[in-house]
Image 1 (cartoon, one colour):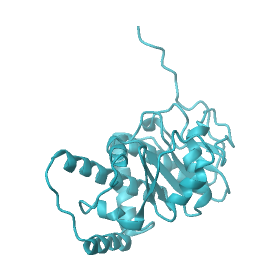
Image 2 (image 1 turned 135 degrees about the vertical axis):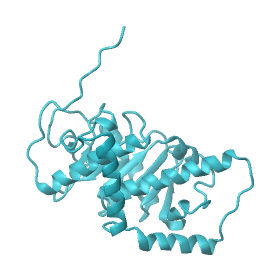
Image 3 (image 1 turned 30 degrees about the vertical axis):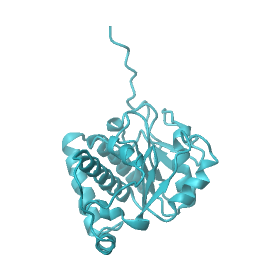
Image 4 (image 1 turned 120 degrees about the vertical axis):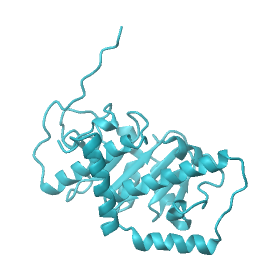
Length: 262
């Protein structure tokens, strides 16, 4: 006998919002579906949050219980810094899951989007003493001060951890939560997703290299820094390359899972 399946399709429309908020809603819903498409979800857990333009202390987050590939622009829930609903659109949220996100949004004015994952490769690398190694060109995007680390303190439910988490992140845009997972901070949804896509890819490659049980070659520190600076000059929020990359992802999504902008 199959269990009864709860209907999590939108029950009511989100109250009318401005054009700027609607654009962020569409991008954030697309980001959720892309994370699902590239198999970076932890079922209904983890979150991607985005700041509501022009509204201090208000954010958008996924409806609790909805899978990432189901999220739509109108189903996203508007919450405050404590994870409490600002506008009721018929969906619940998981306030505890916003603990990590609230720390970053509060500490960083440039944190338009915060993306957190528990991918298999990301968690694996988070357990390694040396963290992410500069093994390849993709990993060098996160070389040096571009990637930060935060030690594991248990399930992120304690509000007093937020200050330490924000301090450890500093001005970096990518963070490895030791024994836990990955986090990226973007000045846009597109930037946060791009950082996560490649950070997770770097972790996947590292896991593969370690599984080969062969000696590996690391570039010199000078080459690592040079390559990281090349990334800094080539891929920033609003750049032509980032726009092209995001639009290409959206074209993929329009073919495999359209409807995120509903």
